[in-house]
Amino acid sequence: MQVKHILREKGRQVVTIAGDATLSEAATLLARKRIGALVVRDRDGVVAGILSERDVVRAVAEASVSALAQSVSLHMSRALTTCSEADTIDDLMEVMTRRRFRHVPVLDDGDRLAGIVSIGDVVKSRIEETVREAATLREYIAAG
Image 1 (cartoon, one colour):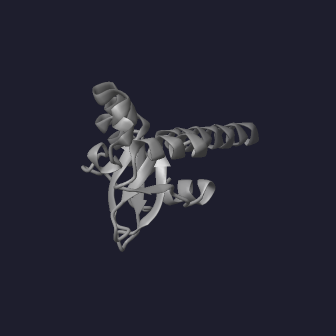
Image 2: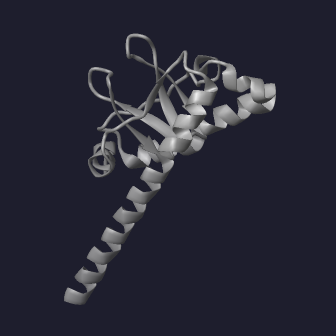
């Protein structure tokens, strides 16, 4: 199974934020949308990084409440790992587990943002695939 199958199920909407927005604005957006990460875009709309709930918590732990007035660009992850729609779920799960992150932006062939996949999306997909395989095996055994 490929990343494109997850996007087909969940949709391609990605919540983004500008790098010059404040952490307070980012935290509000994360809470309002009930999501764990925001893709950060530069002034030209190009993906510049990602800001996760963990990044916000780290910033507040380091600078207390004053961190909330700081810009997203100061705290976002710039070393961005992305994937394509053609990548397999197994490969993506391995990368996410090894690198210890929970959100991966999906880029199309022109390096434009095409979606975002969370570890929850990956696990859900793998569970559904396993259930389908088990049902197919049961049907095969019952027919035999």
